[in-house]
Image (cartoon, rainbow, N blue to C red; front, side, top):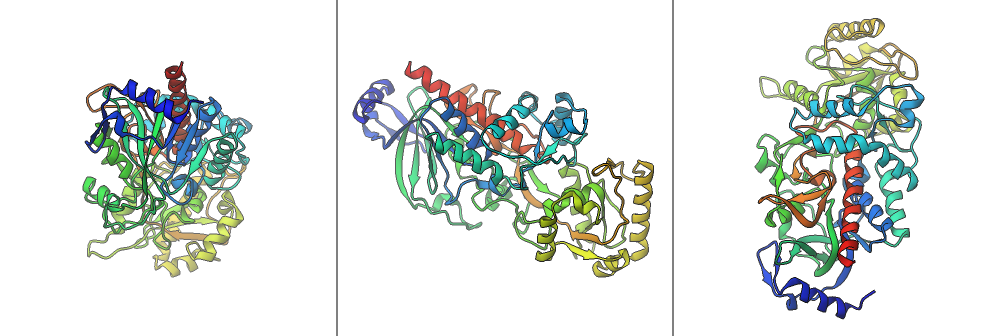
Length: 518
């Protein structure tokens, strides 16, 4: 390994004396005193960042992964762990017929045709390899298969516990054991470009102290000490979305008001995105912000309702508390369901009501007993011995609710939902209606969940410039990217997106370093 002095001299001669920060500040090569050298710098430690770090370190690249938060994992660590792929062992064991074309078609339909099909095809065709990659790195998946709303067949699997941390932690452990440097409280401030516009480093801050305030722009936080990293291969932006950047998201979409709760961790802001935009990075779909239809007003953040919603929406019904009637296909895509819930949430007189989702004890076995217990303990899920008792508790007209339940049970018996054409499928070989007490229910209210917009990449995860063409040395993956999901992402499609393009970004950044060093 070259000494820092020799590296500095070589860099100075290669850079031609001109270095540009995204802020517009120009420095001479002699003004940069590099604090650290690496082949690959990964910004973000969620699914995409972890996949990139693992691939880079496996390729022999000196790899640094940073995260501005005091703990690793970002949104991925609090994600439910749902992972949709074609050809999983769980599908094969249940003789589920699936194919890449169907996968892409489902995501295109949910995205209202706005998706970048070239990126979707990469995700679909490489999802199984990403699953296998995670298994090889120590992730354990349980023998369960689910069908999320908008998917045409069951293709969703989960790690041993319904938590994304059961994926991120093994990947982080693997990367660290292989020699990757992983730092928390370290924020990305800017790219460093040479005279040709190529990324040759990054300005970051050590000892950064994140402070959440939805009314203050994160750029006002000046904590930490600035450092300069010389990066030979590439910077991988796996910095996530901006769902919790209340001010920024409302500038983009006025009706996503500050009172709407959010499922994300507090660090999901647009700070990194804005830094990239100052560098002339191309973006798209920034105004496409998704609400999760499985949120509950009875808890903050992601909570337990989304986990229980999987069997409740699959084998139960959602009803309007004012009438007891169903009002949507409970397995439609997220946008369709969220729009339907919001529509009946606001009453004509300005008051608010919350739809109620109902299922029975057989449906509740579609998740773990621990999840049901947690929901009951928190008061988010309620348990009732009879439908009449449930109706009384929520103030639902009993006759209206009873008719909805009876009608749904007849649809299950006949295998056809005559009202909303909801897919009806079995749970462990059993047709599930709403008849076996106790009955479970929870109140629904969508929450801000995912930002589909971000930087533009090609199929090699290379970030594109506003002026056209790729920016050498800059890669991106995961929710930081705009394009794969169009207007709305299907549930359980985030993990394959992140892992697939995280792997591609990490591998290509490491490859570039090898080529430049040759």
